[in-house]
Length: 410
Image (spheres, rainbow, N blue to C red):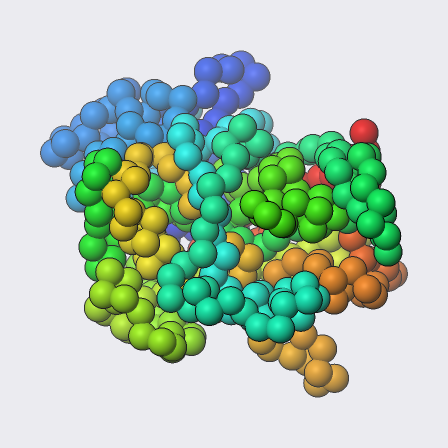
């Protein structure tokens, strides 16, 4: 069993710099080492692969590499894997991961966030005075346009945001620091092959348009969000920060973890969302959420990307279906990912945010430290709290590393 998420089966892509060489450039990660792909390519690595442009790895983002044909990217990734395994890469091309400063892996032009977990919708509806999930939710993936300026690479630190909200139990509006900071357990995926404006894409070709996946924490200010929900939906409540893990795990690495969807869609989806290969319509990616407070780590929750009612392939196809166009580097958030598993006492184990776990903020939850040394009471996040996401595929065959963010006071 692997102890690192960055095994030889992974070969993810990211962007890094060092104190000695501050210019951001492309890299991959193997274990606790970062391979400088700018140096690798300049030294002749993968130079004979058709369509590969070595200068793409010298860029401060992965956009140029992601724009290359999928077959070219796959061949380059496989060559890197073979060269590393065969000890054909100069030691001078590697640095210790602890010395690498990670950057956003792609230049992000647009960011859209979905709302596609049935269990998440059911749990939230119970505390939003909604008798049932709106009918339209079952006909197409729900999504809204989000912010790019507040997307941060892990590890990130951000200040508690301020906004307008109602005082608890009243209708008195006040402006001040949010009192109800929450995380949202999501994954994100980046567009590789663009879709020109005015055109659409076939859902069965969605994989060809996805470069790879990252972990994504869409931090949420629940009090601000509730104030803003009517009439237009959340604004500052969802816009203060979004943290993503810095290493993009490619579709090539994830393909073997393709599985059938968990939930059969009813009513049947429209033709533009009907994915043909039912056995490979979803991805089996195990997700974990931890709280770090006062030097101790507490497990909050777990889930699985497979649980989504609307899959990432359906999400992307629907996004493109109106002809808006998609550009290389566009980021899609899957929406909060919750499940329905319970423990022996009937307590839910797979809740993707604190709003669900605390039943709309009406109760606290007690967490046990992983080393058994103490407990933590949690309703919403306190200043100084760190939330850490992890994700693994198979029997820890490969993973995504951490998506880590820390909330600090103003």
